[in-house]
Length: 167
Image (cartoon, rainbow, N blue to C red; front, side, top):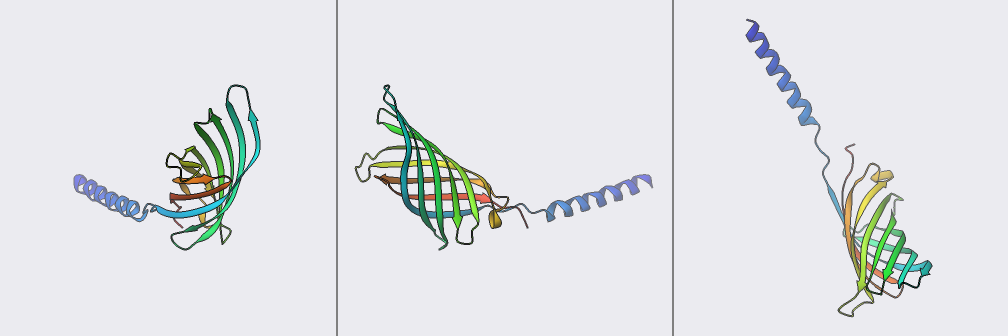
């Protein structure tokens, strides 16, 4: 009799556990693909006798996503250039969408002279999403991007993959 009650209790506990676990569905990841353009303006540079140049640039621009959504991008970038071979860049970006929702990211990338000669510089890199607000509140994810720069003009494409908390 005791074994039967223990078995019934164990089965009941199992059923309840499965029901609770099944109702907590994980957040599905989403992807945003966008293209943007903007201008990068040097704020300051230090050129030393070793051939290294260190600088800070500010970039501002606009973007359009595959979904038709649009917005603006504002970046602050710290870079190092050594012997004119490549730029190693780290920075922060704020993407602001038309509804004023924002995504803040930290990025790292490399920029090199374009070997094809179609642009002055080409670049690619990755981003970590730090946080968001409004409809992006609680966002977690990362991104990748690539682009080219001619003078101060920048053209780029990026993809963000992220999850949002279940509402």
